[in-house]
Image 1 (cartoon, one colour):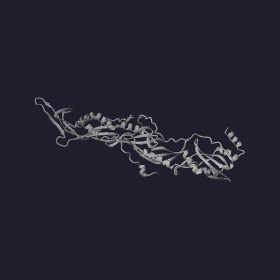
Image 2: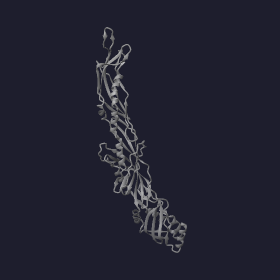
Image 3: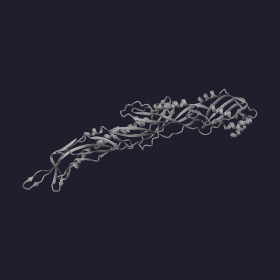
Image 4: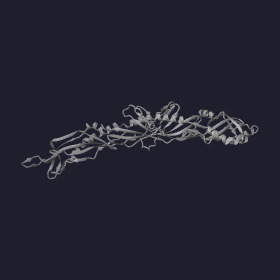
Length: 484
């Protein structure tokens, strides 16, 4: 059908070779959209101090016990029979230390003890016979006892501490060699029983101190809100999933890293509507992939045509002994390519069509059409009407004119995103980062504009102010380091 149309056009033009009536090119393939980038990863370090937990549990555990007022039976032994003990113990303040995925709460216990038998002899009666002692006349023996809490994050973002007795350091034992009796285990059991009673308190205090879910919920909610980078420019982070590393620590500080998987995009126009999603269950962290977002530097065809007007309109070209003058030039989208329509007068009158695929040079930040060439319709019809117009030099002049500097547009949107990455997201959540480098992705062809699309790679962290009031975001390191 199209060939038939071209044939009819050629017949109609057979008698007037200076009139060029070429049908506009077909639209071809679908327009080229903005490419979908891989997801980004943003890390949120969460640090919790547990230093005051030992002090909070301190009052729940007795500081000592004195049983020296009367003899207490401890068991029957060969030869000596029933053995009795008088004892006391005292402990130091509880100490807390985190090592990896567990919390140790320990104390040093010192004690003394005397043991005796109470034999009874017919006619003579019963009497107390001391068999031995330790810590009475010399240094008091000691041992180390305590609790160990294993830390684990549940998938619902609550911490699951589990506290049990920790391994015992016997220290200096109390072995009464005269009767071959060791009271160390007895004292250990007495103190450990007191500590075990405090284990639920330790779990409760650690859960209260961590409060991970509340902090993560704040971040998840704030990260979904559009960030106004500039007037009519919004950065939407679009969080998809969230995960946390296993808790670990050193000294009195527990830490974990919460990772958010994002698909950020820049929206030009009105503030986008966002339907907030509830906090999902936690999962296993994915490998860090940095922060990346597609920046779209749009060049409306109206602006492009102003540039073409300055480059082409009014110019006269010598084409193989013929002269043609450009009266108008306009660029528009034709599917995945662009069409340059040039209206000429002089030795030929009419409209010429050139078609090509736009490209973006990241070094010069110029959008051009390096393969711009005569449309298929032009190549089929011009040989029958004005074959001299099919001249490479004329085509090259059109290619040279179709150069559009978009550096100011790229830089502006890059600056807008940089600014958007350094701000408070909510009352206690702040974003800090910047764009470090860009790489070209191509040129998207829209109905009303061309768009140079670049991938902006950068660094971003989210910080939570545990105190609750927002602090100013720190300056982006990329600003100080300079652009690459």
